[in-house]
Image 1: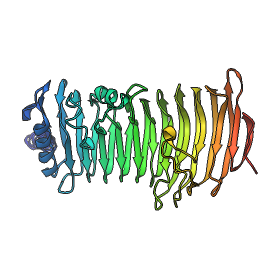
Image 2: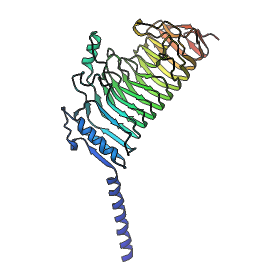
Image 3: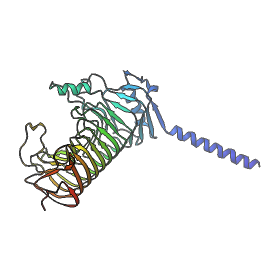
Image 4: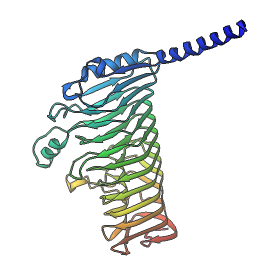
Length: 396
């Protein structure tokens, strides 16, 4: 009996020891404990960077916790090259607020920047860049800062963003550049339709990125896809207001990596300028776009539901007016339904020197004022199957 009691007591000791050891092994850094104040006025940048330095130095998983409240944060770079830690979670239950004067971070490029990090997760919370005054400055034609991207990840691996809200961004909301294996889910982006260059999520030079279950309303592309993007999956997106989901603009540089293996599915576009778009500049380039699938999409009063524009030139200002060198091939439009706000719902304006090829239209029905819409094709080669309205204009 004594032996059994000793065994049970020893077992309890081991369980307790390992339980508290596991808690101790997970480092936690509360922003308020490091001096941050939740009044939205006291600069908390030092506290945030201090938490990052400590988390990086830890060899155990670490959490940086932002409690409820508003925390003023200046331009901050979280560098990962010297990080020992590959499992840092930033749990935000409050709101991070940029300085109200847009000049403070307006020329810094990025507001919150992660560089060369591995295994960083940003969970929950709101990022408020307070960009409205900068939008007004830009829209007035005055000389203004270019604006800062709200949240940027550069040259990073195994990134997660979940349940994050970005509002009032000065420029891009979220940037994924030079990254591998990034998962974005439950993202909410909110900016008015007249906020310039406020792309919701921009991806370039990255592989293995997924964007899921997100709602994006902004003044530019809901999602924009730049050169060097490979294996991108976008699913269950509500887009609007905004300029749609765009591949490009591409082809500005002569030497430019291509875009390949992109899937956009189960998305709804409401009142947007475009639905799904590919846009390239009309100038020489060795870039390309191939193996693209647009599937299960709903258009609600969209100006250009399906568009390829290889003569892209916003505002028709200083247009190159040459021939786009970007080769577009193997693009499939499947199960796309809804309404166009203009008579021409499908527009393929492809390169004279590099015609679009292997374009497939399958089960597409787009109407204009409850009547069949029109389609327009220039240098576009492909085929249609199933029911396709407007009638396909693709060359065989």
